[in-house]
Length: 221
Image (tube, rainbow, N blue to C red; front, side, top):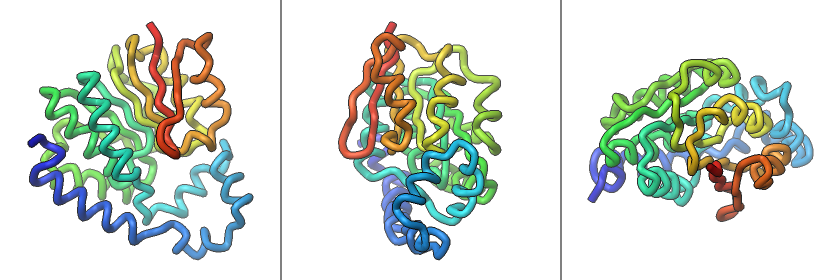
């Protein structure tokens, strides 16, 4: 047994995943009207992300159960103590990472979310899971909130916000990534510039696609 698989976190995640599966963004009339081409264009836009994700403020946009388990396992296996997350949403991925920190003996997870309603929901979920003490939620555009006061050394990064901003967020944290630090990017196929960078050993990374929608990268020493 560990924090992830016992109460209060396990039943809380079961409920949140059930709610997330019932709330598809395509049920939003604004999203239902979009063609696949227009949706992909918005996903890749560096200028329209605030409006686009603002239209999805009532949707969890959660990682899959498998990705959540992967996050916990990676954070445990690298004995992470400092974690940075881009894109809190309702806090499902945050719960997995914070559970790993708890089982690693403690630490700090800094996460950023620009929708105030999602910040409130994530805070409530983390409190219900007994993990809020390990998490600092920064409200606002991550280009600003993650551009200051980061730990000197970062063990793990999760990128799961606006896909087009992955290269910019990497710029903010890169100098603090310890050798061997892990970066997990969800839906990174919408961020070709980011993929080209982390897949180049000359840029200081080793990277592989994992499962259907995750890019797993490691900072080389």
